Length: 325
Ligand code: TXA
Ligand code: MG
Image 1 (cartoon, rainbow, N blue to C red):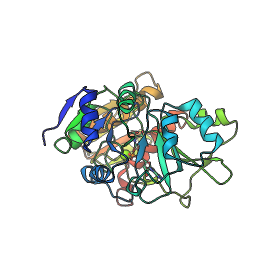
Image 2: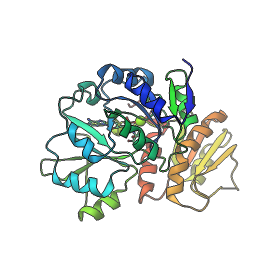
Image 3: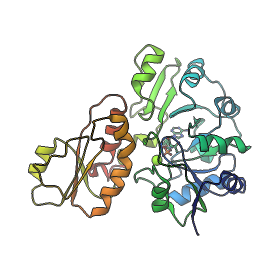
């Protein structure tokens, strides 16, 4: 298939209405979208990504109001959070209504709902009479795409159209939350909305999903977001000393470790800004993966704000986890 990159929202809408796949920009990462109410179209997402069908998809809606048609028993706290954080990078796990096909949720009674903030995504969604199921537009397990060119690299020939909305603003996937029996918030994946921002809004500490929490989410799979080159996180001076003689790459926040020998260096934010580091993370991982290095050494970032989500993705891209999916 000849994959076209363009910015024609009407063309994207037409293809989606025909049950075809379109890659769409969002403020977090690019998504691989299909009509969420059309089970056959949704199945073709799994085929294009080679994604296992036990791994459910996020449903994107053009407003919180529009999203409410597809869910029931929405706790008050969810409405409150939505008024504060949507449109934006926060995904809500909520009881689904029957019109959402089981293939979208991998059989779960909960559906993941998100209202994206990217103007092109909102414009597209407002033209459609259905919501869009969309996982990140990469082959399963690989690094998420933050530009149309990344999508082309990963899925070119498999989809007819990539809607180009420029580089993603945030650069990391949405934060995923659910609610327990007491209507307390449970975090399933850290992401674009920081834990600090949610805790400040609700005025108490947040709960964390554990290995035994229901539901399980693939954001919790250990190996994910992984480049093909082996990667390890830690203290750069120590890791370098342990790996002398190898072709090494470096990913760090702002220190270029000029005294050490690296074939390739990527600084995520020369000024040490974590928001900028998040924007650059996935594209740095994709670029450094092209140099046939033996090993990528990555500096652990401060575990605060968006740094927590960056560290989460970096940990899950470490090669030692590759066989533990
Ligand atoms: O920012 C984002 O969330 C991006 C953009 C495109 O919106 N999407 C994204 O989708 O990251 P994906 O499929 O790569 O990750 C979605 C995560 C997966 O870990 C999946 O298991 C979880 O959401 N998820 C989706 N539906 C779920 C459900 N019903 N129950 C539990 N987890 C669910
Ligand atoms: Mg993904």
